[in-house]
Length: 342
Image 1 (cartoon, rainbow, N blue to C red):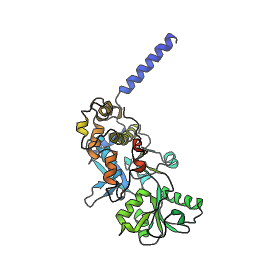
Image 2 (cartoon, one colour):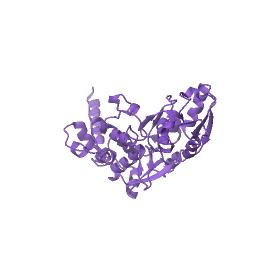
Image 3 (cartoon, rainbow, N blue to C red):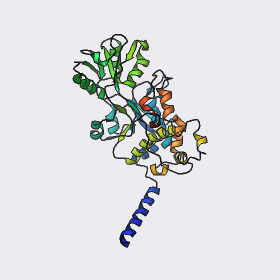
Image 4 (cartoon, rainbow, N blue to C red):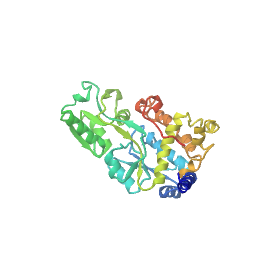
């Protein structure tokens, strides 16, 4: 290598090292959030286990907990969330227009949505698939729905998936389409439709919440689609995108390293280098996101790691009774695999 080339290479490496040690600028979205003192989070109008308000206006669920984790990371307080309930038709417009900072509303990542809405998916917080809910009895397989009426909500991937499945299997299914979730589930339980279709997690939520006798309804074994669900943000603010992405990754990685809401303070003393990086006790990764070094520790302390969030909201000990399945860590045979925080 010539001397000039060697000097250039050394200078380039030095520049990269300098850049990686610099703190990130907060970004316009984070600036706005800090100014108002709230993260504005778009959520479902009411889906048990994912985002639902109780009589006192307290929001709970897997998607709601993600919003609380964001607020803990950027505002040091998980209660600093303004909740904006959105139906399927409203959700993308609300995010595009700036009405909400983040959409955390059981939304499927698809090519069309990713490429045409001016929005970015942060990651996957629940791997799902579309299924069918039917009255317990004669129907035991989706292939038996030939000519059946099926209630479905418009403005969702569910509607198109139902049409595709019907055509592919020559079932001549008759969709009964409703704009609002409550209307579609109400029609099913009143007997207007022979089946109701949405993501399997949504079926479990609907059965637990709305059925007079949950045991009288079964979810058929077939899943007819892939539904990777996750939060979304507007394009154009890379700093906010990075924060939302790494909060989600951090909650997943926290489970892998055994960091929980209960032990997070004690784990700050760990000699494990990766735990030290994550919790800010040995390195300050927060400055690369425009945050302080304890951003992730606060998120974990507020809502727990991903496993705790799952078990509390939708797991086997809840009315939804959902197994971890595909949503287990990669090391336990699932799909959850967070890029390393380092």
